[in-house]
Length: 213
Image (cartoon, rainbow, N blue to C red):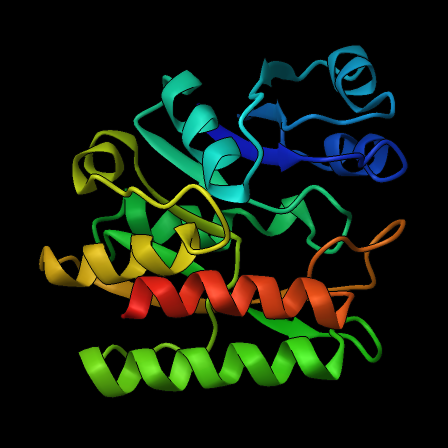
Protein backbone atom coordinates (compact mmCIF):
# COMPACT_ATOMS: atom_id res chain seq x y z
CA UNK A 1 0.00 0.00 0.00
CA UNK A 2 1.19 3.48 -0.90
CA UNK A 3 -0.04 6.91 0.16
CA UNK A 4 -0.92 9.65 -2.32
CA UNK A 5 -0.80 13.22 -1.00
CA UNK A 6 -3.15 15.61 -2.77
CA UNK A 7 -2.89 19.29 -1.73
CA UNK A 8 -6.27 20.87 -2.36
CA UNK A 9 -7.65 24.40 -2.53
CA UNK A 10 -11.15 24.64 -4.03
CA UNK A 11 -11.00 21.59 -6.29
CA UNK A 12 -14.59 20.37 -5.85
CA UNK A 13 -15.07 20.08 -9.61
CA UNK A 14 -12.03 17.91 -10.19
CA UNK A 15 -11.89 15.72 -7.08
CA UNK A 16 -14.52 13.11 -8.00
CA UNK A 17 -12.74 12.19 -11.22
CA UNK A 18 -9.29 12.35 -9.64
CA UNK A 19 -10.23 10.09 -6.74
CA UNK A 20 -12.09 7.60 -8.94
CA UNK A 21 -8.87 7.16 -10.90
CA UNK A 22 -6.67 6.34 -7.91
CA UNK A 23 -5.67 2.63 -8.00
CA UNK A 24 -6.96 0.46 -5.16
CA UNK A 25 -3.46 -0.12 -3.70
CA UNK A 26 -2.91 3.62 -3.22
CA UNK A 27 -4.53 5.49 -0.33
CA UNK A 28 -5.44 9.10 -1.19
CA UNK A 29 -4.79 11.73 1.48
CA UNK A 30 -6.51 15.00 0.60
CA UNK A 31 -5.06 18.00 2.41
CA UNK A 32 -7.65 20.77 2.45
CA UNK A 33 -5.73 24.04 2.49
CA UNK A 34 -8.62 26.39 3.27
CA UNK A 35 -11.15 25.54 0.57
CA UNK A 36 -14.34 27.58 0.43
CA UNK A 37 -16.17 24.99 -1.67
CA UNK A 38 -17.13 21.40 -0.80
CA UNK A 39 -13.70 19.92 -1.50
CA UNK A 40 -13.26 18.31 1.93
CA UNK A 41 -16.79 16.90 1.96
CA UNK A 42 -16.44 15.50 -1.55
CA UNK A 43 -13.06 13.96 -0.76
CA UNK A 44 -14.45 12.19 2.30
CA UNK A 45 -17.45 10.94 0.34
CA UNK A 46 -15.08 9.35 -2.18
CA UNK A 47 -13.15 7.49 0.50
CA UNK A 48 -10.13 9.75 0.90
CA UNK A 49 -8.45 10.53 4.18
CA UNK A 50 -9.03 14.26 4.72
CA UNK A 51 -6.50 16.42 6.56
CA UNK A 52 -7.08 20.10 7.29
CA UNK A 53 -4.10 22.45 7.02
CA UNK A 54 -5.01 26.04 7.96
CA UNK A 55 -1.60 27.47 7.08
CA UNK A 56 -1.97 28.51 3.47
CA UNK A 57 0.69 27.43 1.02
CA UNK A 58 1.45 24.55 -1.32
CA UNK A 59 4.38 23.42 0.78
CA UNK A 60 2.36 23.63 3.98
CA UNK A 61 -0.28 21.34 2.49
CA UNK A 62 2.32 18.88 1.18
CA UNK A 63 4.09 18.77 4.53
CA UNK A 64 0.82 18.19 6.39
CA UNK A 65 0.06 15.28 4.06
CA UNK A 66 3.53 13.86 4.54
CA UNK A 67 3.11 13.94 8.32
CA UNK A 68 -0.29 12.26 8.03
CA UNK A 69 0.98 9.51 5.74
CA UNK A 70 2.00 6.13 7.14
CA UNK A 71 3.14 4.21 4.06
CA UNK A 72 6.82 3.59 3.44
CA UNK A 73 6.61 5.07 -0.06
CA UNK A 74 4.54 8.20 -0.65
CA UNK A 75 3.69 10.07 -3.80
CA UNK A 76 2.38 13.53 -4.60
CA UNK A 77 0.07 14.78 -7.32
CA UNK A 78 -2.01 17.84 -8.15
CA UNK A 79 -5.73 17.34 -7.54
CA UNK A 80 -6.98 19.44 -10.45
CA UNK A 81 -7.49 16.63 -12.95
CA UNK A 82 -4.40 17.43 -15.01
CA UNK A 83 -2.66 14.17 -14.05
CA UNK A 84 -3.86 10.59 -14.43
CA UNK A 85 -3.51 8.73 -11.14
CA UNK A 86 -3.32 5.46 -13.07
CA UNK A 87 0.18 6.56 -14.12
CA UNK A 88 1.45 6.85 -10.54
CA UNK A 89 3.22 3.50 -10.91
CA UNK A 90 5.66 5.21 -13.26
CA UNK A 91 7.08 7.25 -10.39
CA UNK A 92 6.47 4.72 -7.62
CA UNK A 93 7.98 1.59 -9.17
CA UNK A 94 11.57 2.91 -9.58
CA UNK A 95 11.57 3.94 -5.89
CA UNK A 96 10.30 0.55 -4.76
CA UNK A 97 12.87 -1.20 -6.96
CA UNK A 98 15.70 0.89 -5.53
CA UNK A 99 16.48 2.46 -8.91
CA UNK A 100 15.76 5.98 -7.62
CA UNK A 101 15.39 7.70 -4.27
CA UNK A 102 13.23 10.46 -5.72
CA UNK A 103 11.30 10.02 -8.96
CA UNK A 104 9.60 12.89 -10.77
CA UNK A 105 6.99 12.84 -13.51
CA UNK A 106 8.07 14.97 -16.47
CA UNK A 107 4.94 16.45 -18.00
CA UNK A 108 4.11 15.39 -21.55
CA UNK A 109 1.46 18.04 -22.08
CA UNK A 110 -1.52 17.77 -24.36
CA UNK A 111 -2.17 20.76 -26.60
CA UNK A 112 -3.42 23.72 -24.55
CA UNK A 113 -2.91 22.00 -21.19
CA UNK A 114 0.19 23.93 -20.11
CA UNK A 115 0.11 27.74 -20.54
CA UNK A 116 3.13 29.06 -22.42
CA UNK A 117 4.25 31.40 -19.63
CA UNK A 118 4.21 28.58 -17.10
CA UNK A 119 6.03 26.20 -19.44
CA UNK A 120 8.78 28.75 -20.13
CA UNK A 121 9.21 29.51 -16.42
CA UNK A 122 9.47 25.81 -15.60
CA UNK A 123 12.07 25.23 -18.31
CA UNK A 124 14.16 28.14 -17.05
CA UNK A 125 14.11 26.80 -13.49
CA UNK A 126 14.93 23.27 -14.67
CA UNK A 127 17.84 24.63 -16.72
CA UNK A 128 19.19 26.52 -13.72
CA UNK A 129 18.85 23.40 -11.58
CA UNK A 130 20.79 21.36 -14.16
CA UNK A 131 23.47 24.05 -14.35
CA UNK A 132 23.97 24.12 -10.61
CA UNK A 133 23.62 20.46 -9.77
CA UNK A 134 24.22 18.48 -12.94
CA UNK A 135 20.94 16.63 -12.40
CA UNK A 136 19.45 15.53 -15.72
CA UNK A 137 15.97 16.90 -15.07
CA UNK A 138 13.74 18.67 -17.57
CA UNK A 139 10.73 19.35 -15.36
CA UNK A 140 9.97 20.16 -11.72
CA UNK A 141 6.56 18.56 -11.95
CA UNK A 142 4.37 17.90 -8.91
CA UNK A 143 3.84 14.18 -9.59
CA UNK A 144 6.65 12.48 -7.69
CA UNK A 145 7.46 9.66 -5.27
CA UNK A 146 9.98 8.89 -2.53
CA UNK A 147 10.25 7.10 0.80
CA UNK A 148 8.43 8.94 3.58
CA UNK A 149 11.09 8.77 6.30
CA UNK A 150 13.80 9.89 3.90
CA UNK A 151 11.68 12.86 2.81
CA UNK A 152 11.07 13.90 6.40
CA UNK A 153 14.80 13.62 7.03
CA UNK A 154 15.57 16.16 4.30
CA UNK A 155 14.22 18.94 6.50
CA UNK A 156 12.38 20.82 3.75
CA UNK A 157 11.51 24.22 5.21
CA UNK A 158 9.65 26.07 2.44
CA UNK A 159 5.89 26.13 2.93
CA UNK A 160 4.97 27.92 -0.28
CA UNK A 161 5.67 27.17 -3.94
CA UNK A 162 9.37 26.65 -3.33
CA UNK A 163 8.61 23.24 -1.74
CA UNK A 164 8.99 21.14 -4.96
CA UNK A 165 12.33 22.73 -5.87
CA UNK A 166 13.71 22.57 -2.34
CA UNK A 167 12.86 18.88 -2.21
CA UNK A 168 14.95 18.23 -5.32
CA UNK A 169 17.84 20.44 -4.20
CA UNK A 170 18.04 18.84 -0.77
CA UNK A 171 17.75 15.35 -2.28
CA UNK A 172 20.65 16.03 -4.64
CA UNK A 173 22.74 17.51 -1.82
CA UNK A 174 22.05 14.39 0.24
CA UNK A 175 23.39 12.19 -2.54
CA UNK A 176 20.04 10.79 -3.61
CA UNK A 177 19.50 9.25 -7.02
CA UNK A 178 16.94 11.54 -8.65
CA UNK A 179 15.24 10.56 -11.90
CA UNK A 180 12.29 11.43 -14.06
CA UNK A 181 9.89 9.65 -16.37
CA UNK A 182 7.29 10.99 -18.79
CA UNK A 183 3.70 11.28 -17.56
CA UNK A 184 0.70 12.68 -19.38
CA UNK A 185 -0.57 16.16 -18.57
CA UNK A 186 -4.04 17.32 -19.58
CA UNK A 187 -6.24 20.39 -19.28
CA UNK A 188 -7.12 20.93 -15.64
CA UNK A 189 -10.67 21.04 -14.29
CA UNK A 190 -11.91 24.46 -13.18
CA UNK A 191 -9.96 27.69 -12.86
CA UNK A 192 -6.23 27.54 -12.19
CA UNK A 193 -4.98 29.49 -9.18
CA UNK A 194 -1.29 29.24 -10.03
CA UNK A 195 0.17 28.29 -13.41
CA UNK A 196 -2.97 29.22 -15.30
CA UNK A 197 -2.39 32.89 -14.54
CA UNK A 198 0.65 35.06 -15.12
CA UNK A 199 0.37 36.38 -11.57
CA UNK A 200 0.24 32.88 -10.12
CA UNK A 201 3.21 31.74 -12.17
CA UNK A 202 5.18 34.82 -11.11
CA UNK A 203 4.44 34.02 -7.46
CA UNK A 204 5.64 30.42 -7.91
CA UNK A 205 8.80 31.57 -9.70
CA UNK A 206 9.49 34.08 -6.94
CA UNK A 207 9.23 31.41 -4.26
CA UNK A 208 11.45 29.01 -6.21
CA UNK A 209 14.01 31.73 -6.93
CA UNK A 210 14.21 32.37 -3.19
CA UNK A 211 15.00 28.69 -2.66
CA UNK A 212 17.69 28.80 -5.37
CA UNK A 213 19.31 31.80 -3.74
